[in-house]
Image (cartoon, rainbow, N blue to C red; front, side):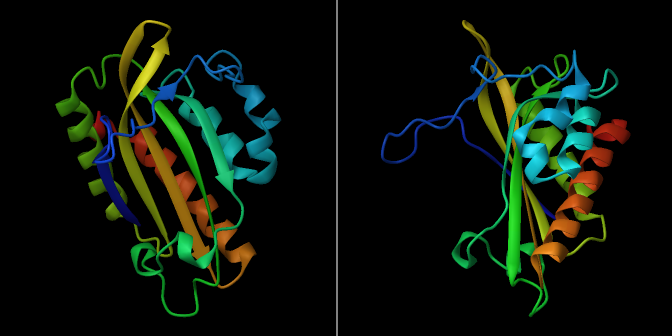
Length: 190
């Protein structure tokens, strides 16, 4: 599986502020308190495997919890790079993707260096997984946890492709499962 990470916490060269993970948004559903609600989310209707992954990422033993997600059921050819997905020729006719905003379950990313180290270790673990036609991009961002409480969070973008929409969806399902397993199942990334 391809994987990479980056910081996106300040303004870009044009002075446009970087996105902030905002837990205070009107549609927030706290899946830590009601994991069964993951299956009610519109995104889970578009990408059924997402509900189980969200429930797992919000479980009491997970090192993270989620604030928001979205999915893109069809990506245009100019919205992804076959080479970045490690896709053989003929295996990138269809693509889809999703993102999940992750927040620390404790003091996991109290400092930028901790978030960076965590992302590097998770990317190393993900790169060791034998799964082609997909990638994970981790973006470290500022996170608004309460009206006056800023911290750090990570947006995980997962993208997959295939020779057909069904094949791309199966690959994204597998990538989501392996991502959640790596994140929740290995204390080496904490």
